Image 1 (tube, rainbow, N blue to C red):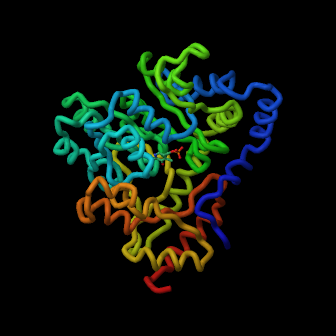
Image 2: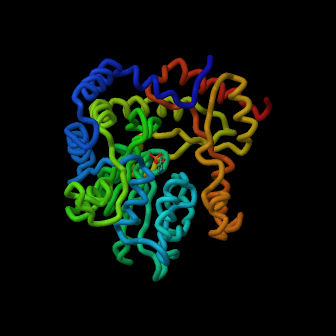
Image 3: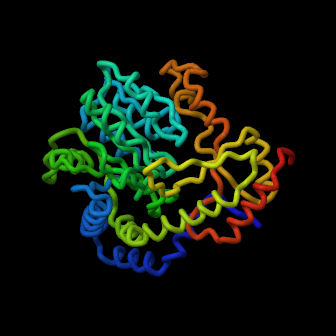
Length: 367
Ligand SMILES: *Cc1c(COP(=O)(O)O)cnc(C)c1O
């Protein structure tokens, strides 16, 4: 059996005729940029998240860097985020000239809220909480620190569409929430796109202006903005997928439950679920001290895996100027050496899941 780590075409096939109809309708409409489909998706997604406004953008990184730009965070300012995140979270901060400050993660791979306050300085302007792998961060404690120190709270929800903490949807805890609809995300489109979600009317106005060359009225430019727009075709496709998002999440949850119940190998550490959190299983991430051997063994068995992420941002070549030496973030660095994401995608069959479980349980540290 050959099992990919991810396979977006299977998700497409689950609702193929609906996607094809939406695409054809949009192609025939003659409307391709900022029109009815984008408006409809923005409304429906805002309702789904439970926030006032959604603003469609070109990708998740734009959502992040535009957020810090609009919050007025730049040179001389600090933003605290977790050490073990995807590089885009950090680039969103540094593209504005601000300095990222890394906090170690807790056992659920998100900001360790108990270590957050010690990192706040007079330069700190915001906290960026990343709901990594689809599991909500410890939001009440993080909100508490932000309130006490008057910091903006930004959520990176690129992996957490529909995830909840304490009954509340991720994306509704902070001032601005950033989403990506990259094809492999839980709410993935068929190309690059993203969005922000906000409650504040003034933020809403600013994002709409910034994404469109800093212009509200055509050919009148208030600020130096950018071109970052969700397009009509992708919006039409996202409307279809959003309609099915809860069933797609249920399917991921089922696969993950099979993994949690089926994998019994003591060499493998299973992911933990935070108290009060409803995770949407963007990834199913195990830990293994013999990861390199496990990867090779699975590969030989026909099973693909991925590492999210092998090199933490502070050790990347592009961030050597931050001067954060190896050993500074021991938990982050250890996770980078041990985490492994198993195959998990919509359209994965029970037979495939059972095969992965069987092979994992047979792993004895030798190939
Ligand atoms: C995917 C992702 C992003 C960036 O989204 P793009 O649409 O690929 O630019 C940001 N943060 C996290 C945590 C992500 O997983």
